Image (cartoon, helix red, strand yellow):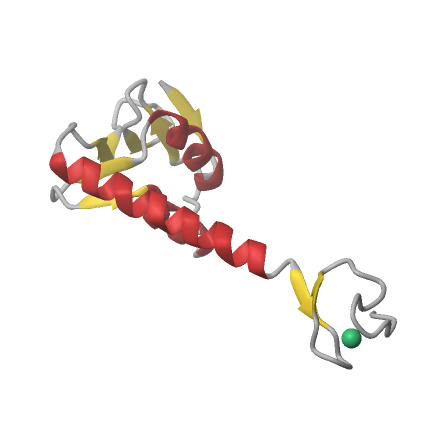
Length: 129
Ligand SMILES: [Zn+2]
């Protein structure tokens, strides 16, 4: 078991072990949900910290570690997990596509599609900033 002070650090390591969990109510939680939670700065106030089990379960503990409350459990293999993994793959593929598109720009003069780093338009020759 490892102990973490920051939610960002535990998410980083946990996602090496697991991508889909169940919360205490049994609802699926994916790596995408955790990344969204990261954006909202979910860090705990010390002396509480996060625990990561060998299997990838995530818990919250006090300074003495005997009161670990497990909040996320790795999801068992099966159709539901497979469906979640597919959603995750689709999500990251979409992000990749968006990034690829944002590496282009368009000439202000003639509208030619150019690489983001282009210094001159390949069609009309106008210098680009
Ligand atoms: Zn141009």
